[in-house]
Image (tube, rainbow, N blue to C red; front, side, top):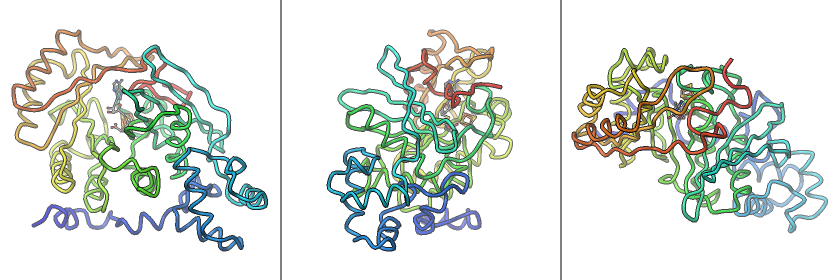
Length: 375
Ligand code: SAH
Ligand code: SF4
């Protein structure tokens, strides 16, 4: 049976299909708030324009400003008549965020931007320069309910899902700030993307599409702690970003100690679902593994990881723990990290080591807290 059909059989019930996700655009603005421009897909925007007595070709013009030039202000869209931008500003605000933005820059060029949503919620995105381009790290929820012991977002608790507009808007605003071409987008900021499925996939569709940000699915990575129903639902979509799974342990009990959500979605199920996704999308899954001294970074931990992933469509990304305020957890020393990597590689598993960029401005993985920090 084809992988896609197997996914359909196994996950039925929790599933929406690609079509349903598209149709949801505009209905999921934050907390039931009035939709803003980026809540609507092209069809939705045309309908709004038509019902306001405006020609639908304006939709293409507006979207060119937004996605081509990263402009989120109708007044700056110089080919729109004044009457239209006045009407639209009242009907459908262009920017899901307040204008002000807090920026902090690290010595390595990484920049964190903190955007304020219309209800005052703070949303963090990170711009990471690489060669001539930038990678954008985008948040999908304000806070997170899953409480991983390593993560400042989780320590602050869950506040709400971000709307499609707030997810896309971070990418557009961050691209505008950087002024450089966007090479990659990673959904690895605050929150668990697969617990905000419809808004996230709707935003990813627009990021990937040639008619939207034109990034392409191969340059978009969604990172999940392992929400199995969400991974199976992704298998049934007609677009497939890269999948990263935060693993952190190759053994169920130890994993549950680091990521409490592991009690709900067990290791074996996650590996099976991720394997299916790799088959459907034709690319390996990246397993992220935070190295924490005394918890998951011994040579026998490396053995277990190598054994679990050998001969699977998998890569490993090792991340020495970024320190989080008010936590005693520490990364292992450089030599232990090196030996861990060699051991996993000995099983034929491609293994990379992620640099903790932006750590001094609390912009590295696990350090985003929406201005609140651990409670
Ligand atoms: N909820 C999703 C995506 C957001 S977390 C997930 O858990 O995958 C983004 C990444 O930060 C994940 O890979 C997570 O494992 C990692 N992370 C969390 N705390 C960290 C820390 N203290 N140091 C390094 N990486 C961390
Ligand atoms: Fe949530 Fe991911 Fe942080 Fe875990 S690591 S608490 S899933 S954001």
